[in-house]
Image (cartoon, rainbow, N blue to C red; front, side, top):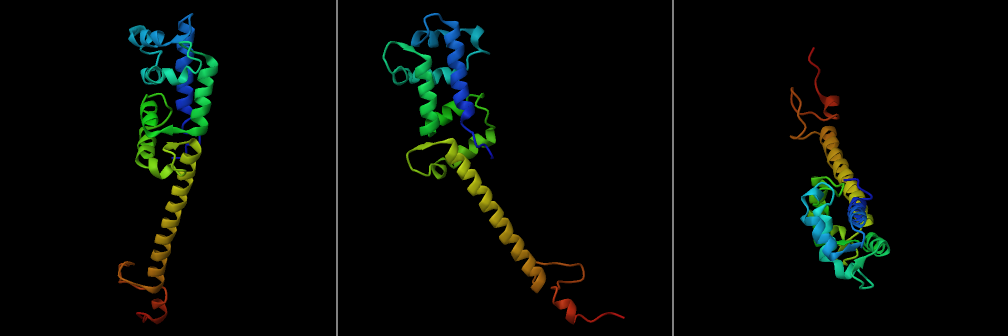
Length: 183
């Protein structure tokens, strides 16, 4: 997987969507403007609907001062909070499947499949650090398993058994010492 900043694409996508909306509307990013932007076909290639939907669905909690507009500071606070506290499985699913999260389908599937394993502190959220730690631990386990398999295979070759095969039969390294030479 090796995505140590796995969630950074999601935070960037939210920020970019906010910036596009903020630049399109003089009165700022309001709930009405988010809905309007999503309805415009001209915005289809500019505004990511998954990110815009997230802003729409969570508008009340993002608009901390309750003035009806998401400010740049409120948006920055949101992405900083997400970065430090992580994302729930639902948030991750919605935002990662946006197509612009920077994550491959296999990475998204791997994170979703192992979400609970990655959530080491049990808070129902994952951070980039937890994803990276899981990735490192998974790689370490794979190498240990590979080493154990290789060790077992090497021992079979050394001592001889049915799993180590040779065209002339199965011999260990020790058996050659006792094998009769054909003159």
